Length: 344
View 1 (cartoon, rainbow, N blue to C red):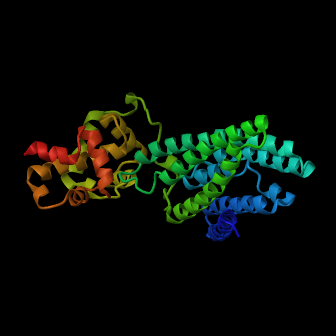
View 2 (view 1 turned 30 degrees about the vertical axis):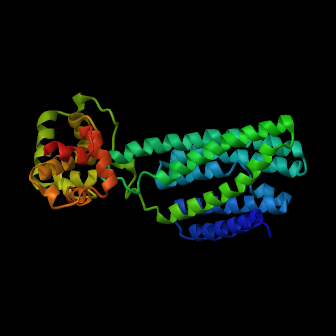
């Protein structure tokens, strides 16, 4: 058994095992992720056995829509939006029908490859757009976004997008020149890319935590409400700042918009509007502002001589050193270490 066959067998075994594991975990997002992995297993098996039935079950039009459905499930996208995107699966159904009608047609396979690469480019771009919107949403709800940004899915999508471009160029080259060394190399690269995708989805999916306890739209309203909608804005904003500073609520590493709203006896939507208009930024940056100011006060007291930067970061409410560094540099225009040196 050669190296490529070993990689394919490993891909089939791991994807099948993880796919069934996710499928029987019950939640909608896990079921969809399980279907993604089972689909990949069928795809690799089809490339090994070259059986027409397997090609029907492993349409190249399936993976991107399945990843989009997984994203919609885990971020609790409204059912109406999810239903509107399900028409994407008609491309896979049409492709399966054409495979049944022309199972041995090389031209059909080439056209399908070209169209699926273009199709995947569009759907993967859609996923990236939705992830960008999701990132803005969680910053309006949470003060700690670790594990909620779905960075693994974003990075995986970028890689899949890049390979969609590569396959599109490869198939175009094959259409004009026929068999060539570049096409053969791309085929070999595809084996290892598939294996990497399986491991990536499986590992990240197992670690992925639930993002929302309730749909995000239950907490938020329009991100740019009119100032006229909030009476006595300055007074209400000042009161909120006073309570946060007095009780050091920002020290809660997992403080959420709803937690703060409950503490202040406000509705989440009202609090979000007051923060957006009073601070001119979202909840995430609002809370981090207090944490950074508290860090600066500790430095001025000489606490940095007794604790590490990571210890100080956690002391002021950050979950990780990397998040603290990014927030501090964005807020102050310098690194925390540079700030400490400046104070000497």
